[in-house]
Length: 203
Image (cartoon, rainbow, N blue to C red; front, side):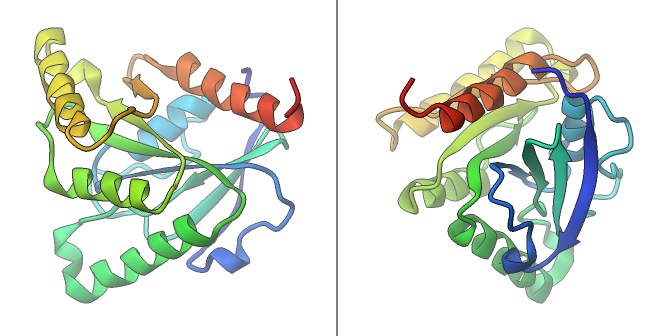
């Protein structure tokens, strides 16, 4: 897929106020500081499309970007940012949960995992919750350039091993580096294949 155009459309906290044109939405989510904004900028080839920050917990809204006037890329708030405090975390949780569970246009949720870390309980619990609620999702491991190949493979293998304890079949898994554009074609081609399937369901 070639991205010719990527534009910001709207930010809000209420899924009911999201675009109503029925175009497919591909949402991106992960723990705070997982590299979500950098990944979105890399995928769209637009350096400042999503705001990047060294301070975790920056995204607190549902952000819609229209891609090629064909589908939406949705930047969701990060989960589990401890410094938000209990009330702040609960507010973000409600925003995330209501969008994921009620948004009919949500076609696929990309769950971002930082490959520098071994399996995190909060990520595993979130993925389990997606399964319990029948949400279609894929996994993207970020920051693969930050570790040696052997160490990143070891951490990713640990995650896969942990997931296999409760999943008979694993979702699609992508390895990415925003700095070196690793995984860009694979993620975009996956989105493209789903879009084509939606447009031509009988094929």
